Image (cartoon, rainbow, N blue to C red; front, top):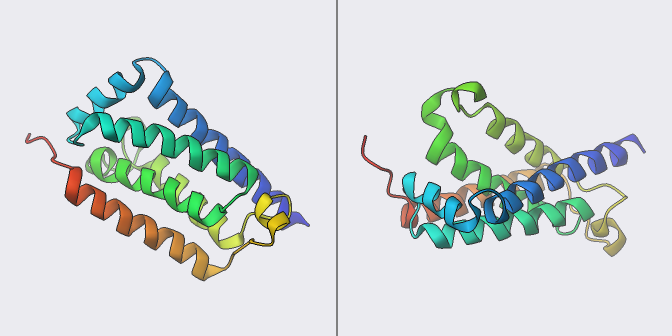
Length: 163
């Protein structure tokens, strides 16, 4: 079916994007220490813990999306990463990404909510295991879980620098 192909393309592209993004946080350029330094500069504390969690959460969620395993939970975790980026970095810069705005973050969140809503498709481990949840309730639940988790994390850990 066409929806299964669309779900698979969306899952794999989003998943690979998150694996690579997480890999870059942990093992690219400045590695964990560089990511921790950047997180410290935007007010996430303890920065090293956030760098480690971000790295491994993005890689795990990305891999789960690629194979279509626990897709709504993986989408929710990835949405949480994007919501954190939205609040801590992008929202204050306006819409356009070339001004470090939230354009990219918004598109990724919308795609993840859409994926959680339509489901992982037949070409997924979720389908093979009979756990292929989908529907507007699942999409809303993935978004809601991410919003609550992100809000709690930010209340506990984010101390934005005074400008």
